[in-house]
Image 1 (cartoon, rainbow, N blue to C red):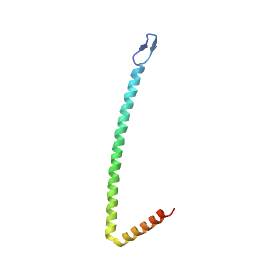
Image 2: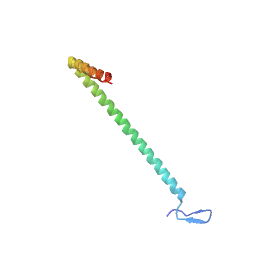
Image 3: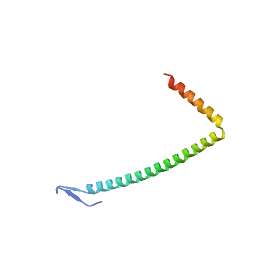
Image 4: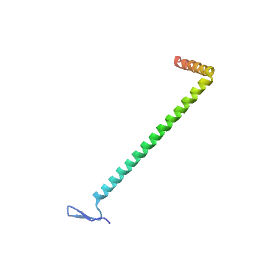
Length: 90
């Protein structure tokens, strides 16, 4: 048991509530700091992975356009035509 404390000299308690609350507060602050650190690590890793994947996709598209220029123009024209139909349609 923790140290005895008195409040206004009338009530004796078997433990010190203020000390317990300080321990709980400190534990919560430590935990929130750990969570914040882990979340920032996960976010940084996710951003790095996203950047790598987008660079890979860009390289793949660039290679496809270089290898197949006429198909690329056809896909671009088809995409523009469909987009024009969707925008014009009300």
